[in-house]
Amino acid sequence: MANTKKTFLLPDLGEGLPDATIVEWYVKEGDTIRLDDNLVSMETAKAVVDVPSPVSGKVVKLAGAAGDVIVTGKMLAEFEIDPSMPQRAEGQDTGHHHGAGSHAPEDGDKVVASDEGGVISDAGEPAPKGEARADSGTVVGAMQSSDAVRSEQAVAVGGVKAMPAVRAMARKLGVDIARVRASGADGVVTMDDVKRAAADGSASGVASSARVKGTGGADLPTSRPHPSAAPQMREATAPARSTLSQGGKPMRTQPPGVSASGQPEQLKGVRRNMARVMADAHAKVVPTTLCDDADLHAWLGKQDITARLVRAIVAACKAVPALNAWFDGETLTRTLHPHVDIGIAVDTEDGLFVPALRNADMLDGNGVRAAIQRLRAQVEDRTIPATELSGYTISLSNFGMFAGRYATPVVVPPCVAIVGAGKLSHDVVAVMGGIEVHRRMPISLTFDHRACTGGEAARFLKALLDDMAAPQ
Image (cartoon, rainbow, N blue to C red; front, side, top):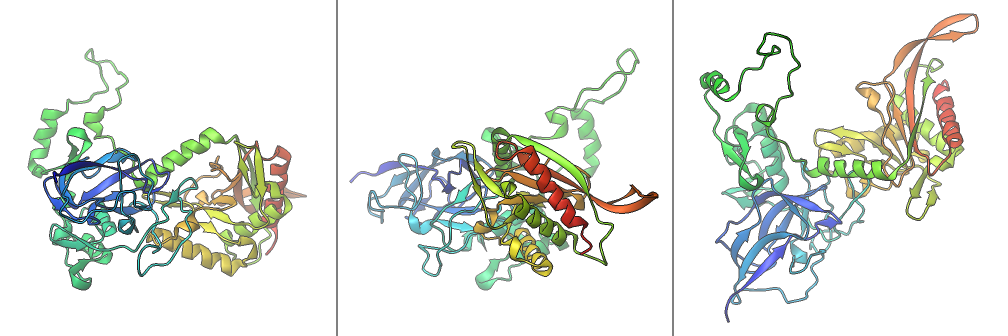
């Protein structure tokens, strides 16, 4: 029987994810691969996913190089099927959504924690040692992850055993993973090994070399010039810039071009998804913002500001349920929630995460603090369950921890409101008989004007301010 060719299209690695980024290939063109062996590691908006081979045979063509973005449903690889090797039965369910001509094995889908990409998976069917999990993960409320997942496995590439998330971290930190001392079982390089090597500089080199875009957008390493050669190179490749025209008169300089400012950076992973979600929110929401100041002058003793904010939001939600709601702009329906789940915006280098503080209306101050610390720790080490990144009923952005008094926070559907807390300040306040200096917190409330009235939003804000002003 003659060998036949098969084109493998990139399957939907989540639920509706439009594309994924190549992290690394486990094979090269001309290699022979067996059914269900790992073919490529892909980074989505939520995780690093190992995509297995749908067939056994020879690898004829690969779609791109590390760093390239592949659109869901487009060609990922082409194979020459070997009928003498194990093959999957035609029509067998794989657990993924595919375009025509694509087949991905159910047993091979592995979603793993990505230190660059976002969400960690829970182990689930069909993994023999896994457990089922709910499917509703998202970075900022727009997309879901695949149902068929199993636990992360270390893969040997180039003689080095490491999990995809560890390789992603090594690239991010400029560490040559081949030079990292492995401390894991069976010689596996762990995340701690990579971070330790980055801290002491023992494995820097190849991964830290400069990169330029090759044909088709692929990242190609280039050697760094010797420091002594840098001035000559700059002189030869970049013309001198001046604020004076040829006639010696001042002029406005033009902004530097691509050659002077570096190559454009393609958004990937969490930040790529964040861009899509923000654009979607801008297109679908009719935002209006109210601002005022919470007066904290009456507070007794030292208090947890974030816990008080959460309590005040809960009180406002109880007073005006219209803002603790979801709104469907297509059907013009809203859902009022009896419970309060607050999405807490967490800023990271890789993009925005919004974990949900569940049942905030049932927690006291200590419970709020413990829950927030747990969520932030899980976001930082990428162990946050996918189910904790969606389903909140209202949002909080505590941007004042860094800077800024007032803002226009973005409402992400289906929520209808978000509270923004600005930087604490000491303000001069007029009181009966004179003036006083009070500690105050600026509060910004953005709401979807399709779902609630200005009066409802104003009453919500007043209830929040009243609770913040209480002594304790």
